[in-house]
Length: 202
Image 1: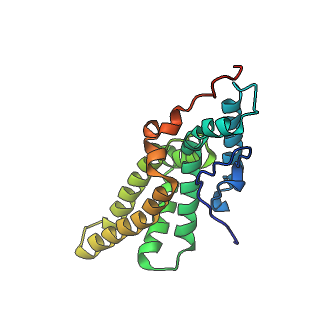
Image 2 (image 1 turned 30 degrees about the horizontal axis):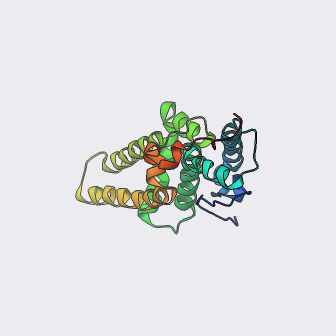
Image 3 (image 1 turned 45 degrees about the vertical axis):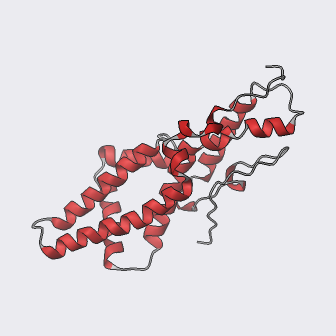
């Protein structure tokens, strides 16, 4: 499927503001674009609500820097899952990648909190990056466990190590591109604390 992936790097232009796919795109495999776009609309609405005067474009542009951090919980979880799934299932076939594919499918087949947790992340009902990391760790442990059963032979141990390496090489670069600080430590980002421009009627 032809597709464009574009990370959501801030574009600060007084008088203009990008949201949705105009600003940030992920692979369409999970159909999460509209969820992220509508979430962007809600965040932007809440930021603009206290403003009764939009004439000072530069001051408002500075204030709206917080948007890029506030949107991260929703956008980063959906973006990461979409791009990971695309990379895993479109990658050239090799034993380690096939093991990762089977691990993903097997993990979802477990049902319960495992499948419902991933579904909540994909749908935007659980916009928590730490939940994403939790499922990645548990899925990796599940995959290694499946490879080691019924007896952890040297070959099985090697296959388990390869699975962890391949999973990390897919997952971690995507997390890095989303911005580790904004995803997991948003309170340390100065723009998070932007307040409405002074002198405006609030």
